Amino acid sequence: MKRKFLALFLMLFLKSPGVAGGLPASELYKYGMAAYNNKEYGQAIIEFEEALYVDEEHLDSLKQLSRSYCRLGQYSKALTYVQKAQRKFPLDHEIDEIISKIHMKQAIKKENS
Image (cartoon, rainbow, N blue to C red; front, side, top):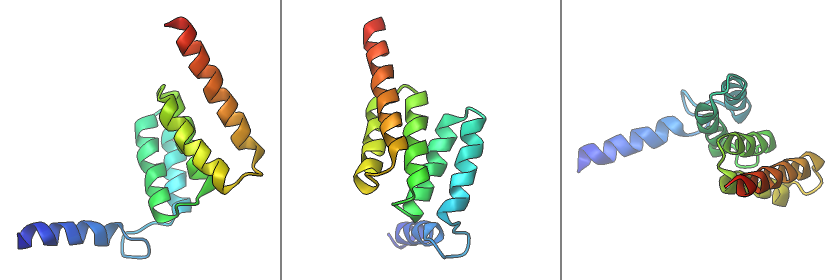
């Protein structure tokens, strides 16, 4: 019991922002973009989610997380994140473009099935 609690505490402690080893959202975003640009969308998702763990309003991570899920054909998840971005940042017109692209890809997938 104590061992499990200690492991959980250490895991949470090391993940916390500002704690030794914790990286800022902007740095995690850069790692996510590197993975995305290398077409490693699964790894990109991990990095963007980590960035959002540090800063839940990191707009670029929300948008790129949506794009990553879209690249993997997971359109529902892609919409979830881009709609979250839209609620937080309603004046960002790039979000509208991402939503349109996701809907277009969903329609193509439905048409081809």
